[in-house]
Image (cartoon, rainbow, N blue to C red):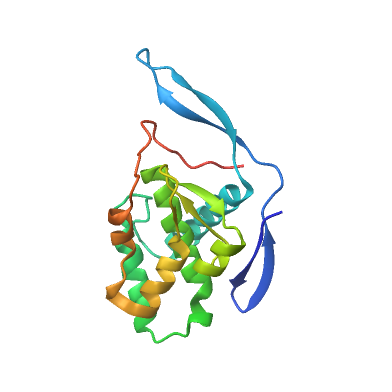
Length: 183
């Protein structure tokens, strides 16, 4: 069972992903325009992170007119938001829920635009990255979008969420538009 401690407001609580995962067809479009592929089960990490990213986007865009549309260009907005939070001289613990939401959003952009897949890190990866989940690229490499957002907060402009996308190896955009999944 996938569980992670996520600060929400002033109260921390354990949030657990659902046990059931929705199937997804991954494949390609043949010459006749028909989708060919295999049905894969979504992992609990994928289901949970996609839901978290969608909820975060709904909440933050309800109060602000931010163009968080899951495009690669929207990663500049993520950098901008993190810089604003940073300039507010906030302590990391006070804004951890915002950083986690922006990290989830960043990972979801990688999923939708670069062919990545959400994965739960093993114990060694958790220790290395300091995060419970990340994304795996089609070439097998794993990346840490949650940690990248934290680095932007801590180091400022030396770290860029948008540059993370541009540096990714093994990007393989899907020929099919990846639409949000909802339960």
